[in-house]
Amino acid sequence: MSEVKASINRKPKKKRINQIPFGVALFICIIGAGYFIANSSPKAALMWTFGVILGFTLQRSRFCFTASLRDPVLTGSTSLTKAVVIAIAVATVGFAAIQYGAELKNIAVPGNISPVGIHIVIGAVMFGIGMVIAGGCASGTLMRVGEGFLMQILALVFFIIGSLWGAKDFGWWKSTFMPKKGIFLPEVIGWVPALLLQFGLLLAIYIFADWFGNRKSNQ
Image (cartoon, rainbow, N blue to C red):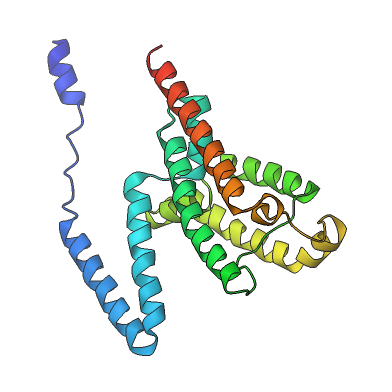
């Protein structure tokens, strides 16, 4: 009797919608938009292509800086933490090559070398609290907006408002809290020691994250 009632009360399974046609239509729209942009600016079309590839990679990998710091505490997983460390190491190679090439040509080193100060502490605390409440960092928020998450859409709106507000008052922050010049390690200790220090710290963080993740998974 109970089995009959359970079968009556059981809701029929919702039929899954085939998303392949939507994916094909979206792909055609992406190609069409890229072709339209290329007619006016080949550089913008290249940026469009890289943006689409980066967005797809972020969505499939679930890459998020917030999760890389949150997951080790909540779940013990450090896979994203190690991915972020690897990403920083790869970016270091590219940026170091560009900056060292500029130094060899006796031109200004490209990049915004921001000074260290109390503004970093204040900004880090505020942003850290905000991204945990919002459930994602900038890249994670953009990825989830594309997936249709309403919370992330709201977070993106205030992300833009906060960025515009910060840009408006940046001059006051700079004159009040920021030192006059940032610390560029290659100028202080040389290129080779600076890169060894950078990669050494990243390797130490990676090894610790790998040990911590394995320790948590074995408990």
